[in-house]
Length: 212
Image 1 (cartoon, one colour):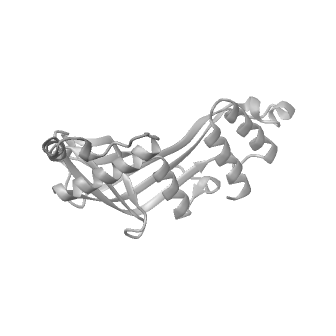
Image 2 (cartoon, helix red, strand yellow):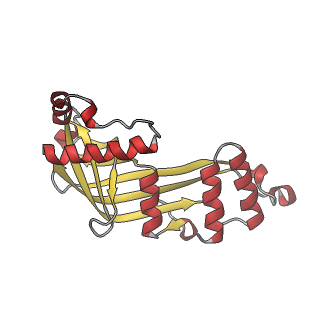
């Protein structure tokens, strides 16, 4: 990934926060069949391992399972807020007419090695935690839980998936938030994005300018 210094984010707490806020990761693998990418909701265990540990699951029917090997290197990409930035939002554009369009975004690349966890206890615990977390985030008045279904049905559903675990060896963050622009241009771009529904990206730009 092209990573100019002014867009590099290295603070673990910021990288972990993006993963936790945007848990659907693109798992990129390479095998004899070539490159593949699968989109998987992950749980981040921030305190487990040097850089944290990711846990998720895939369908047993997914052909990817036949391509995975214990300890194989993998990449998981997490994308945060993103949006198009028009030159018209820069104050300096109206003074110099020397600005071009761009795209602001936040991404984290998690590099690590994969471990298969094909056991019912691991998968049950993972599904329970993921469900609990996302039922709360989706503001359900009565959060769904596994005991809402019959034990036999849940056993069959759990048997249809396989757990995976990735101990993160390296986190690479790129927060492209107009850090290379003048304060007035950042303010204009943030206002333009916010007016079009990109409030999270606009706030991230303001925080980056403040060094937060």
